[in-house]
Image (cartoon, rainbow, N blue to C red; front, side, top):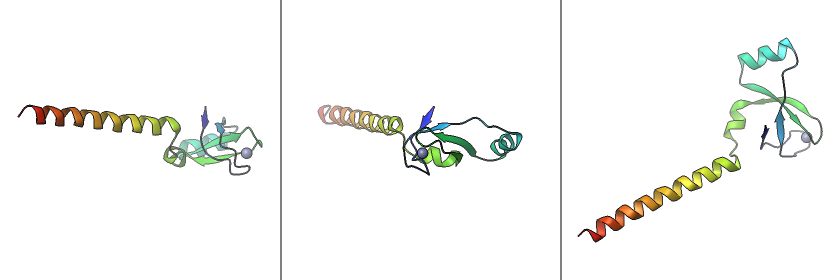
Length: 87
Ligand SMILES: [Zn+2]
């Protein structure tokens, strides 16, 4: 699974989750929010905070937010029309 974060080394915008390789990395992963990622562009591998990944808006999340706002506007419009025409 890729994430939409720029690579710290080359700036390419797709990093992939990388498996932990050692006991040390497993422990860091278990104790912190840090996760290992790899860039397929330049082969960079390193740690990025899970919190930072979550904060980055993915295209899917942006689309879901837009749809939610559209639905809300539609519902409010229908309610307003019902209110206005019921009088
Ligand atoms: Zn890179």
